[in-house]
Length: 145
Image (cartoon, rainbow, N blue to C red):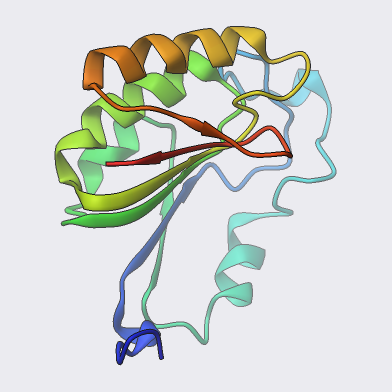
């Protein structure tokens, strides 16, 4: 319980292709890129992993298209980790209106070495949105709306 809230009642949405194929920096996922050992084995395996959590909703597909397939509702926490900065920006723009005041956005690879383009895109968006991004020691970015 967090402040008296039953965490099993809070809906959690996981959007992914749930495929082992690696991606390029534009989010294209293809078997010709090889396998990424950090990606899911299969959608069925992920479903089994989360089967005991009734509040977890797995949305299989490509972002941002798959965002339109479900009604998410208010967002208090959003973790962005697509390894495709243009798509990450597009998704955040689409979801920004649904993020609650005080809601947290965690951006993976925001200030990590070699991800300068990601950093540049998010800094530009932060200016547009009128927010600041806190950089963590591990290179992630944090926005509090």
